[in-house]
Length: 188
Image (cartoon, rainbow, N blue to C red; front, top):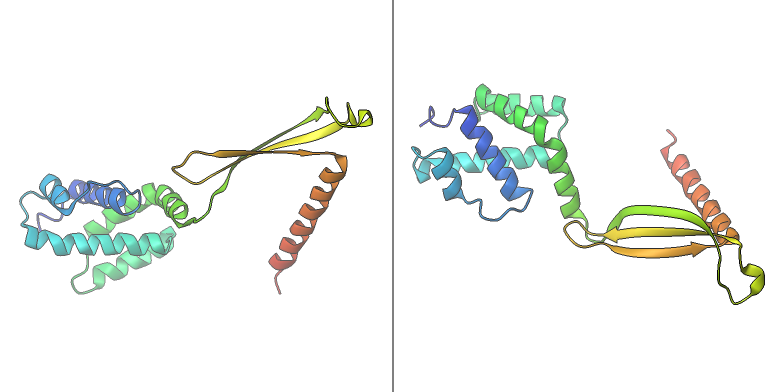
């Protein structure tokens, strides 16, 4: 059985299937599908523990958001562990993580957000063309459009209009935020 579970193409396909199911939320990737497509010669009883081990390793790597040094140390420890993985499997896992790390991380970040986030921001400066008071016509106004949404859902747009006083207030608040962040980032 060990020989059947060594193939790098099959293991790479298995890791891709696990990522599709675990991180990208694609339904339909079942244990039976993975076994029948990638390891047809392995019995379900032998495949199940192997699948669980690979899923656990992949989840550990992803949840720790391992950099490549951490990954190497983790996989080396896994190869030395009783019932762990082979060096060949470690090489396939390492190659898989190097090419999928960013996409998996983004997917996990999107799944962990509860609320909507800012997807985009655009702005322009216009001259005011209508007002209750004629003195305000043709004064400059900043128009800001915020695109707000959650991954996988349609965006909502919020349009804001600021006169010069409001722009200065926003800039003052932003500089206070910047100052607070700088203070917090100072080494103690």
